[in-house]
Image (cartoon, rainbow, N blue to C red; front, side):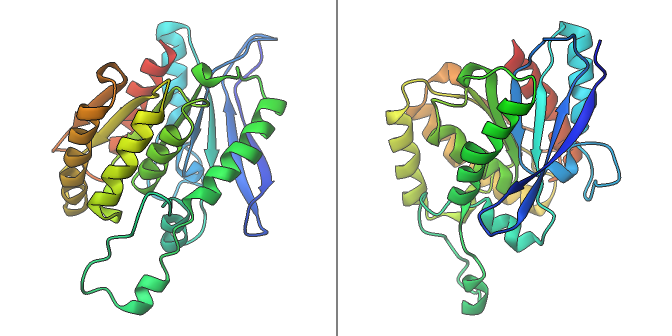
Length: 265
């Protein structure tokens, strides 16, 4: 039996820096392979000294799933160790539509918003995934591959899943920041992608409501979910709303366990 371990990769990012990517491989037999879940905010996924805002406890979730069902997964966390603005930029795709800035936001502040979610997507597809598939015991193909993120990461997860239905069979879309966009643009993008997807990924969508931010996100979540109910396969859609939950890792940890279990069924 090979013990579980978290490995660290340093991979070239589009801004001429290297980005830390951590890969958790659960305990396994020689030659055993696992499905894989790629995730944003790798710095918050594992219970160690790198945690900044709380932990998802993904290792514990995989261990518990292995114990209960005999199934496990490799978890790949892409770090973001810079400032909040840079994180928001790289997890906000430009192609979805025009950013819906508040009326009172200064022009200088607007200039700091440089939507570049497509570059993160390219990094994932063309750098991270090939490196993981080459170096670690993962199963390949869409049925064995999922993506998950929260907040801006939830938005990016939504974008990645609908942009690559040939590569991802499931996505965790937690507390997504849909409010970033003009509503007409976002709706048009969703309906176009839904119509194009021959194999629609399973979308596990969650939002809370116990703080001001989560309440704001809840409003747009409900609106987007209504659009999806009209144009997306019902069996590939799950919406979870918990008004008592806050915008934090403690809430997302719970939903991750459910996503993990469903993905591995």
